[in-house]
Image (cartoon, rainbow, N blue to C red; front, side):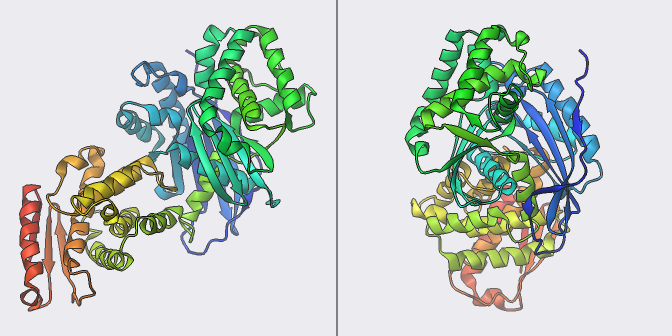
Length: 518
């Protein structure tokens, strides 16, 4: 099979979606976003200059992994090979960029994989950088951010629609803040496969596809039908529709209900995707174009849209701005942790005590235990959320808190980050749960377990729930051992803490760790 050519554009650097004023040093000179979509993989590289992002390079390939899943949601060999080959080419372009300056995310199809770990390990080797899986509402949030950075704020409340290969995102927002977000399990790939079998386009098939889309929209129709003033579309399908309507002379640039109806009839008249001959349509998109048009028509009908503008910015641009925010004072994850703590009425004073002591311990062992800055952030967030399960019940509250963090929509967090945060909360007390960490990739387990040991120690030292003078402690770490030393006489003055440390040493010994204290 001939290798697909990478669609490449290398425009002169230009401003990208607004400005970002760096408040802290250390923002990379070049940042990149990789979007592993169900239909296409995209790479966007930009330069950070004087607080502004400038596009340096764009790469795009139609990989269609959304159509490469079997009945058990396993990625079939041909689709897997296409994906890895594409990521290897992207990896060559990214080679040399610092690890933290590249953010790669997978969306609907990777969310559906029955065993994502196996594919992610190979994909990360091919790309050369970590790949995160993001939830549908996190995808919606990033799409809105990318859109908002691409357009001036006109003061209007906006409905944003993004039709991808495997999912459709709906967002209502104002300014740069999304207010309502939803991700629906329908996209141009899966709808085209289901209703335009073997590429055949009929009026009956189009009606069935539109009905299927309306059924997906029905639960959220009331929520998104009102409360906005302007409709905006983003990403591949909607931009392709706009391109065809404009090239055919059926619209002045926006997508109207009348022009969309004309496109619908033109598709039905072609009878087969191989015979689609519409001006402005990339032939590679033709096989999934009818499904995308059916979804867009259903969205117009269900939400009462008459006219839709089209934005340049979407998920990839949102990823870049979110990434740069992590180097400034705008890490959304920190805001999310604060909001979750407040929502579950966590004792903020106790959370601060534990977080402060955990950070003190972390600094002393970070090098010996090979723990990086991201690990330190994860420990801080776990310390601030470790008691949220008390809102449910005191009995086994660590399990309740872990469940909340694992299952909730946490803006800014990837699926893997939520899993790790939940594991730390689950393991912060009682028996050390080695089995919980087995869900992590083998290479990531030691660091996660070491963070859990530090969190357990910080929680233990603040059992009294009031400010105490710790006078230390001083820590020294080895591979699976931790030595903790307090000021002379301190443990004699705190016999309950000494008893807790003895019990902790026994629990850690059963998990293969050695805790030495004195």
